Length: 341
Ligand SMILES: [Zn+2]
Image (cartoon, rainbow, N blue to C red; front, side, top):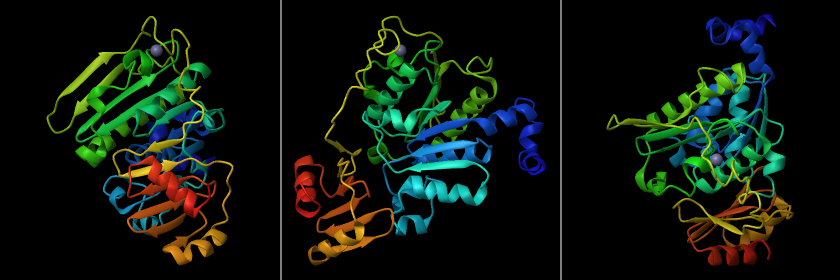
């Protein structure tokens, strides 16, 4: 306890937290979905702040182009193509070994959302796509778990707290994927400062909820957006659910029912993800088998296989990310040829 008090002494001194608030943080369980730029910053802040239990869910692996903004990762992680969830957990263990971290290198989909998100007090959004956000929203509204939406692109950031049945939910504000957000980090780039600001705001709101509950008076009840380059800033009220909202009004959770989505084309990156659960793969065996067909390399977490112009990254559960094509049919056929149909 003494060591705890020392580690968090500057935060305990802050009157919004105090000793009791710090104990609540230690007892809290959160999930962070997506550990890219925003997710890294959220994880870094909340793990250092002493949130007792973090579940980090991410489907991707570390690449050199991530290092400009994804603050938990380094060149060694990229050289090994480590799954981001695994690399993040290893990094946290070096600055706060006293909290529990669960790394899940998985894609959040309707089939696993219950297993991956149940039992947490709060869900944080570090994803880069609306499909996953609508899935989080449906699950959070159904289970009545608060969550915080965050997004960034270019020099722009946006965030909103969602307290089911008290505030607006994501579908209240955006009944369909917003058109203004079709810009992605792949096409518009992103400033690391915009990501860090949006994560700082969301992490602070998370502390308010974890310490003071969803009724905390200082909890923001707006959709807040800003552009750090133009200095524009806007806030719209999200204090009330929208009558007739598909999710929180009619409780029609269409995204939870979306079983069996076969492929996902990743955000403008000329790559396709293939879901193949229930296909546990022996990396050593596959490495041997692929050797005559191209360059292959594996560690405990990923196997990479290069065959021009494609690059395939396989995870132990059989999931694959194939770079060099945006055509699901091409990706499917490569997978069938080299891994199995
Ligand atoms: Zn709603």
